[in-house]
Length: 230
Image (cartoon, rainbow, N blue to C red):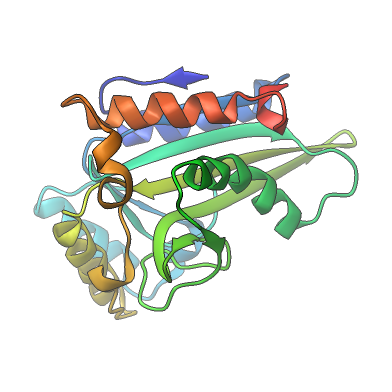
C-alpha cells in the first residue's frame, strides 16, 4: 500500500500507472489526490468537437488528460480521492465479478461505520455506471477498469474515485462545460452525489481529512481476506 501525501500531477500519475501495470508481479494499491485537471476516457476523445473543448479549457487554465481505464470525464481535485489497484485475475472472472471484488473492501469499511452501500447506476451523476458505490441512492464513488491480457494471464488496472467533500460544485460545472463544448451536452447534478465527509466526518479527529480516511481505507484493502492483501 502506498499513500501519496501531497497532490500529484495527473499526467505523471496516469503514466506511472500504465508502467506499473506492465511490471506488477503482486497486487498494488496506491491512494492519491490530484492537482486540478480533467481526466477523460478514450471514448471522450471521439466526440465531435473534443479538440476545441480541450483548447478552450486549456485557455481557462484547465489541463485535460486521457486515462487508460474506461468511464467518462472526471474532474480531479482535492474534493476527490482515488484508489488505484493493480492485480491478477484468478480463473474465469467476469467483469461484474471483478468490479465487486474491487469494491468489496470499500463497501465493507462503510458497513463498519454503519453505512449501507450498493453498486448501481445513479441518474444525474458524473461518470455514471453500473458499478458506482452508492449510498442512499446517491453516488459516493465511481469506478473504472482496464484489463491487460498477455501470455495467458490477465491483469487489471482499477480506479475508484471517491467524493470526499461536499464542495464539488465547480468541478461538476467544469465537466458539464467540457461536454457542452465537445458536442455532447450533459446535465450532471450535485444532488445526485454523496460525499464521505458528510457520512463519516465525525470520526475525523485531525485537520488532515484525506490522510485520515486514506489510512483507514488502505488498511481495509490490506486485509488478508481480500485479493489485495495477499
